[in-house]
Image: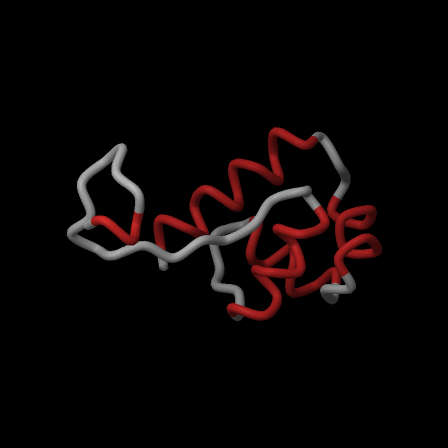
Length: 74
């Protein structure tokens, strides 16, 4: 999950949106979003909300999946 959250933080930064604007767009409390942006954790539900507000989806794959292969063919 840490890798997913790191990618989400990077996407937030790349978006150029303020934390306030992203909190409004995602419905996630601004304090929670600020703590997350500063390195804290975020619930799965809130991570999904933030990802959706950024135009992203969170996809799960097998941990041992080789890069470049479809998850269902791991």
